[in-house]
Image (cartoon, rainbow over all chains, first blue to last red; front, side):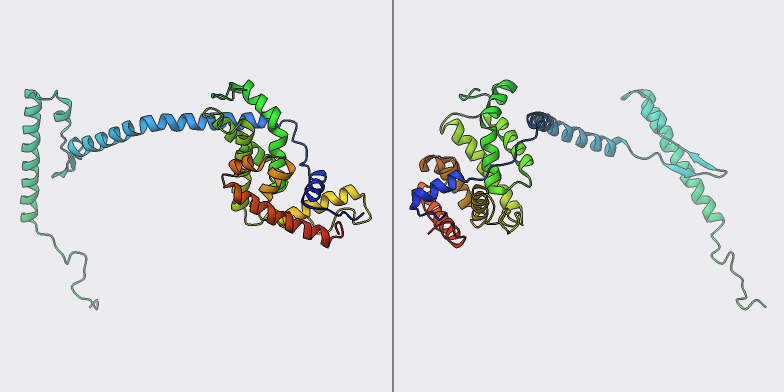
Length: 141
Length: 169
């Protein structure tokens, strides 16, 4: 059948024969609610993070600052017989601004300086032999 | 349902879903096709849920929901490289010897595919859903004149297509 129409007729034809979507899945509403809940949780955690983010940054900067200020590595000094750990452990264990702490720092400095000095003296006494391990005769005669 | 503000909790939202679910699917289907219809319907309702809280009843709930559905559909069309136009087979289902109603329906669907997504959105709202042009303009967030010119272009294109296929004189 051929239709003859003006704008209204065309619109009526289109409306009468409009395509319909397939039926929704039976659990569509449940799925939508699951998506809504997931989104709500995501938004809530983002909101929480927004509150805690500046605090986390401050804490991170503080930790790095403390580590740089007080977290100097304990010096390892090679002694005469074996590797000796001369540490500032006593210094850190002692309560701050105490005599014990000052004494520990003093001991630490004295030990460090004397150990360094003795190593220096040793190396002066026996200079390193750069030819050690090399044959004086490269041809092997 | 609580159109004055607040999403009314799950019960209010369920009422919105029951009242507008079919309409949302129809809008999405006619603009984007059926391949990702369920996902798009879900995306639309998540947006509705999020927006119901701040909804202030300026344009009416239905127009607002149209707006969300159309925007979701158009965003999807823009994201997708391949348009809805390449989704359906070219031949008319059942051929011209089939049930005339089914043939016409296929032709209308095929005719829609020839339009741009923006023109399809106008046809869907103004023709299929009977939304007045002023409200359609609000839903599409374009001036009323733009809606009219898009509708005019779409009508001309669809009439030519139907004529080509022997439906109209």
